[in-house]
Image 1: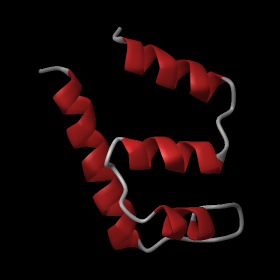
Image 2 (image 1 turned 90 degrees about the horizontal axis):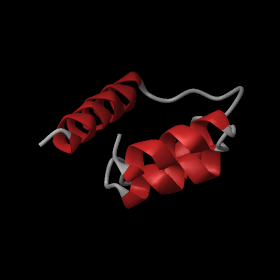
Image 3 (image 1 turned 135 degrees about the vertical axis):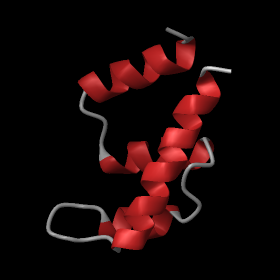
Image 4 (image 1 turned 60 degrees about the horizontal axis):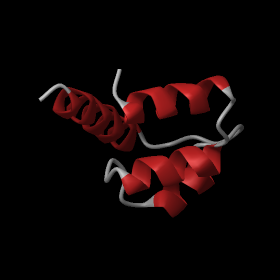
Length: 68
């Protein structure tokens, strides 16, 4: 497991909060509108399905890029 994967895994087990998760995804260029995600991805809110689909694809692409 590379250092980033180990760090990310450790953060998840520590219960990373939404703001830190959004910051991490922004730093990795997975999301480009952190304000949207902070305002709409919290408890009691919703995100647009097409935005969720883009996020899922970008996360998958990022994971695949780690293997090369």
